[in-house]
Image (cartoon, rainbow, N blue to C red; front, top):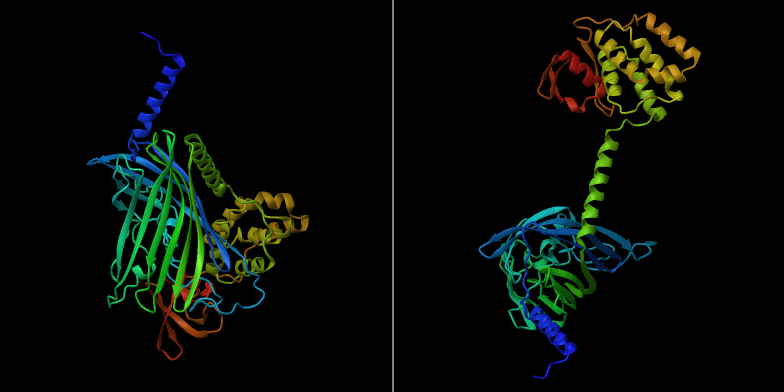
Length: 472
């Protein structure tokens, strides 16, 4: 028998291998605990600005359910906006109802797009990309649907090189229909009248190249969503791009897609070009990203726990503090000392040693609460005082500590009887006597004997301190 050349046999074997690989059907197959991550960038060119949505998304296999895959999604995008118009004077014209121009209200102005925050979802997906169920929300603006569904395009039946996926839409005020999840605009008006109009979306796919591992697929997309009424907004979208599927991984590899959105509002229309790009991140790169993020988070937590460095107290703030520390009512003094004790500063600067002189004097105050609170402050910042205070300041603090303020006399009813009360603004004042504190309501009795009720939070800080003392 004539022997075939070795090169021919080798070529035949390799051809058979690649032919079998290419013949394998395209299916989503994310194994349990397998993680696949993508870097996503969406760019929208608006009439007066460019919006960019960027971020990472990750999918983890969680097992199967009746031959369908359970996948956990985690991630989100952040939005940045760059103006393309010099704002030297107010813009005229633009879309109806939007001062200064810009796209009409609808899918652009929703306040709570979950895709623009870190969120999670649980998906149940067939091997061909049919969304069986989804728990969670990751909606994006510009009718892009859920971020969690972005890498899951429709796959073909075995042997097909061209296929499609489409939905005919009956758009009413109460009906939503799309494999991409609920859309905005005319799909979510919430009116009582059910005005109906036709519409639809369609995706078409064609395999361009297949090397046995990566399959390059041309995707074309169109959406027609006419306005349900003259008061609503209509949309049209059309575009194309390249989608790459990783046969060995059983997941999408990348997408580079461009689409134009035309927005119709009344007699106005505009075209908004959109670019959607996402690429799979190598496993080690994603692990490095998670490690770096965890290190940054740990560093931020540690920094938050660190005491703050000494910072000069502003003159207005120090004036307020000294006024309260020298107040004739002990409750006000004690309240300010409590506030100072909660400061994270490790010490004071030389310019603020006059504050410590007053605190030093309060260490011998006749009121035990004031004395104890002043001692706490002294232990906290006393080292700064010993290091930075002048000899005169040290002497003043020592002298003040030897004698107490003779004008502060604390008795059981030292703050009872008529006094002037004021609100936080200082504009409203009244002479009255404290009666009771009922929850958060202060009951006062005016000179005419009539009772007055006021929310405690509306009183001045000094009066609130008095209330705390009298309510005990």
